[in-house]
Amino acid sequence: MLGAWGGLLGGTAALGVVLVAVWLRAARRPALADRVLPYLRDVPRVGDVPSPANQGPSTSPVSAAAGVFGPLLAAAADGVERVLGGAASVRRRLERADLDLTVHDLRVQQVLWGLGGFAVAAAYSLLKALSEPGSVVAAVLLCLTGFVVGVLARDNHLSGQAKQRERQILAEFPTVAELLALAVAAGESPVAALDRVVRRSGGALSADLARVLADVRTGEPVGAAFDRMAARTGLPLVSRFAQGVAVAVERGTPLADVLHAQAADVREAGRRELIEVAARREVLMMVPVVFLVLPVTVLFAFWPGVVGLSLTTP
Image 1: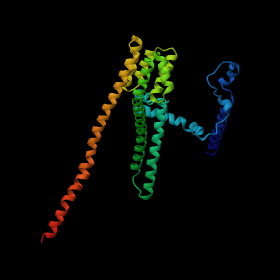
Image 2 (image 1 turned 180 degrees about the horizontal axis):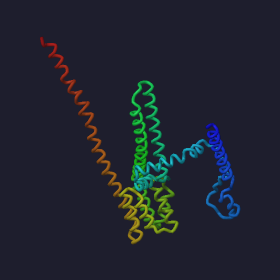
Image 3 (image 1 turned 135 degrees about the vertical axis):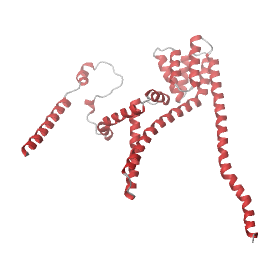
Image 4 (image 1 turned 120 degrees about the horizontal axis):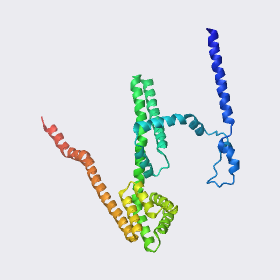
């Protein structure tokens, strides 16, 4: 019996040594890119990205953690994607928020936020168990709830980022549209006017217009570039603006009048939204008046009389 166990342990150790030797041999072999690179030195490259062989081993804790936990996070992100779904909606919100992330990157961030919620719930459950021992099932359910809350919180944060960027675009739109109208009315072409406005301004809308300008400079028609901007944005006003510019360029209608009308429409929509917000705030202002100020006023009015009646009553 002891001989069988010894043989099994020896075979396992030998197999481990063989696997380590094979891995070391595969790791020492140069990659295909490193072998081909000396013959392609004269080919122009965009950016000077060093190869892993030239970089050397990374000693960063972040890189080490990514190398160790990266596959686990990727598998967890795939699981979140299968459970939640909605990749098209996530991709659209990422474009609206102008985040340089993929759907998989967002799922990884959701897993990290979920782990943060899990850690908070686990710490609370541990402290509660030290002071007052309770049910293990309740602690496990609390930790799972913290994980789910963290995952959903990252999704809600993405929606908030998209809405915040849309508010910035609406705030910048009238000024940018007026600048475009002035440049076009001065005799510049739509592309030249767009280039001037992009170089002289900054913000969320200017970033979208810079993307349109880059598409136009790569050979895409102006109307098609603005149509893509209209499909990418989540704001109806900006979509109408992009479609109006595309139609004006294609049919030759006066572009300055279109831009002035679009800016006026956005200002009118902003004014209506401000009036609606003021009406809602007016209703909310009645809550402390009715439930706090009015009872205190009634109490001050009737309390002296109640005290006087209690004093005069035999």
